[in-house]
Amino acid sequence: MPKTLLMDEIHISIHAPSGLPDRDHRAIQRTLSLAGLQRQLRAAVVAFFQRYRTLEKIRIVISR
Image (cartoon, rainbow, N blue to C red; front, side, top):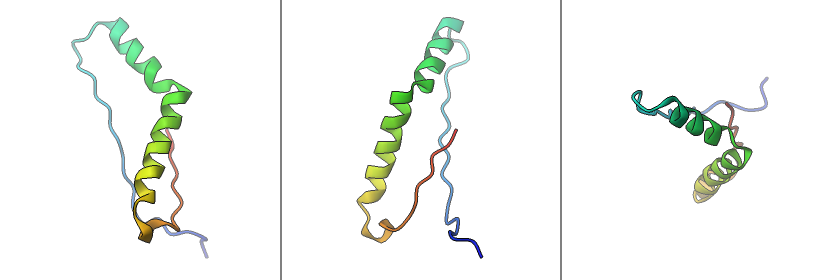
């Protein structure tokens, strides 16, 4: 029997305008790949869910 039950999945899609110069697309991609940005995103998601007492027992997994 599984130890956890998948209750929901939430996906975030990030879109950049296709008409941007390649250097802008590369800069956006570099920023999205930064470990610091990913840590801040995880912290923001965790902080958001911690505001709801009924969710205090859940486990949050963020992957790319």
